[in-house]
Image (cartoon, rainbow, N blue to C red; front, side, top):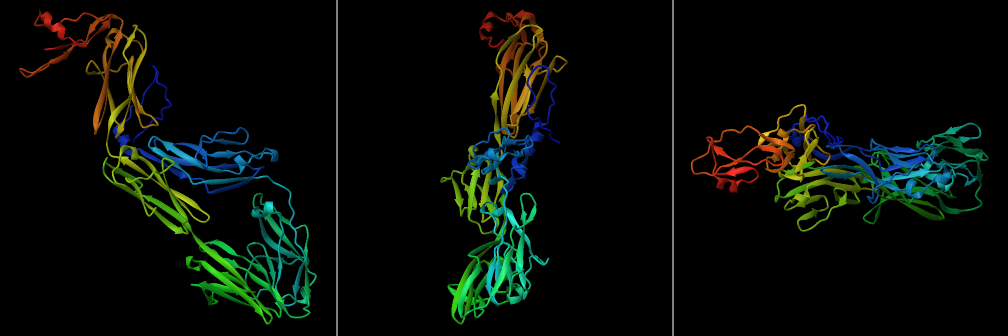
Length: 576
C-alpha cells in the first residue's frame, strides 16, 4: 500500500517524518479524473439557492476549483457564491435586488488538477430565478359543431419554462389527465393543451380550468379564470383552419412523441399523415407504434429512424391546409477516450481514440490540460475523433479530453499520456552553512522524475546515522516532487562535513553536495580501508569537521606525506 503526504507539513526542525516507499508510489500515480461531474444545467429559485457537487480522484488527490465558461478562475462572492473544500460550488439564497446576471445566469466549469495535469467538466449552465407572483388563465373557446376544440393554459412568458400543466378540471368536477386513447373525447398533450373531440351542443357552456405545477417549488395551483366552451353551428361551407400544430419537436429515443394536428372547418375536415422521403410524400401506415388520435399523430417508443419530416394534410370539400413537423429523435450521448492511460517513450507515436455513441453529434472539441489542443504537422486530428502524435515529446505529457456536443447534451472523456522514463532533476538544493554548536539546522533537496526518484543522504560519503538529534525523511508533494530533508536539532562538531543528497530512478541519477561547518574543535570520523589497483589514481576524502577549518595533514605508517601532496589537497581530500 502506498501512502502519499499532501505536502501540508512545514519543513522545520521538529518534524516527525513518515518515510514512504517511493518506488511503489511511482507505479500508482495517475492524473485527475471526475468521480462526480456536475450536470449540464442547474435551475434554482432565489429562496432555495443551490449546491453543485464536483468530485475528482487521482494520485496525488487533485484539487478542485471552478471557472467561468471561458476557463477564467472564479472568485468567491461573499453572500452570493463560494466554493467549498469538498469541491462543491454553492449559490446562496438571495433577495430579488441582489440578482446578478454574471452570477445567477452564467456558464461555469469545474476543474480538477494535480501534478500530472488538469481536466475540466462540461459547461454547467446555471440559472437562478427570482420567484414572482404569476397567474394562469384559460380563455373561452369557440368551435364549430363536430370539430375539435383546443383549450390552452396561458401563463406569463417569464414563467413558461418552469410550469407544467398536470391536469384539467371541468366545472362539474370532472378531472381530465394526460392520455391518448383512440376515440377518446378528451386528450391532454404534454405541453398542456386540452383537445375536446367532436364538440356537440351538449358540451356548450361548460367551463374548464388548468392545474399548473411550478417545477421550482413543487406548488400546484389552478388557473384564476375558467374558459367556457361555446359550440357554434356553421352558416355555410368553411375551409379548414389549423388550430394546433408544431413546426419542430425534439425528443429522446424511447420516449413517446406527440405531433398535434387540429383544424376547424365545415364540412368537418379529414386528416391524412405523410412522411417526406426524398422530396416525396409517402403515406404513413397507422400501426401500434404510429397512432392517430383526433387528427394528431402519436409515435410510441421513438427510434432513430423516426427522425424526419411529417406532413399533416387537412381537407374538406372547400379547401385544404397542411402542417409540417420536423421530428428529431436524439440518443443519449456517451463517450470514451482510450486508452485511458497511454505510456510511451520519447520519439514514439501515440494515438488516442474518442469513441462516441448516441446522436446527433454536432461537434467534437479537444483539450490538453484545459487548453484548446494546438494541432500541427506532428499533432494531428484524424476525422476529429482520433488524435495522432507522430513523435512524442516531453511537453506532450498530460491530460487530454474530447468534448462532444449534441442537441441537448454535452459530455467529455479524458486520457493521460505518460512518458515511460524521465531521469531525476533537482528542483531545489541546500547551500553551504556555518552553524553554532547547539544550533538547529535543516538541509533540503527537492527532486522530480519518472518514475518518482528515491532520494538518499550521506555525510562524508557515509549514510547519515539517525538518532534523537538527527532525523531525515521525505514525502511526495502535490506536484509529484520528492521533498527530502535532514533535520539536526542540536549541532555538534561531528555533524560537520560534506552532505550529499542523491536522487535516483531507473532512468538515471543526480546528486548535490555541500559543506556544513560547525564551530568547534577539529573532529575526524573514522576512515575505512581502501583497496586500489597498482598504478591507479586514488581520491580519498578526509572526513574532518570543525570551524575555523582545521589544518589537515596526511601520514602513512606514522610518517607524514610529503609537503608536495598538500598542493593536491582539494575539498579536504588527497589525490595520490
